[in-house]
Image 1: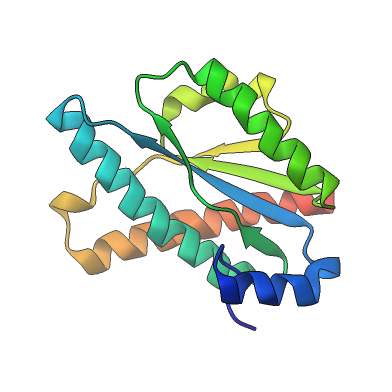
Image 2: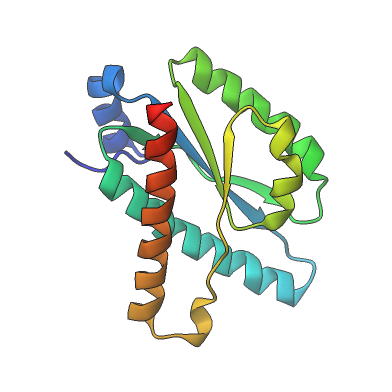
Length: 157
């Protein structure tokens, strides 16, 4: 089975197997151009989330679909973003998804956890700029396995 990404081939595969797919994952990724530090941090989080979400998709193909990245402005009020995300949750729930997970490296989202109907999973973002690529990828794979365990526990409830 091929990976179910938010792409034409992934959606075609999803349509053919949607009765088995009850989980959606929405990666949350910040964007900001105002300061060079934020710009670099935002780009690193985007790259890392791309690799991280690919690892989840590879391991859990046939059970979940990865939604497009939800990109928000770094300086934006996350309370307003949480309200916008609720529209995504309603759309997913009305489409038959029983489990919705939000993935983020941004610890600020943890303050919004109670206002979200989806399960928020905060992951510390490893800084891959100071380690060899192979070590960085292994760190991300290890974190992805931990998140998979969390998701599987949620499925059992």
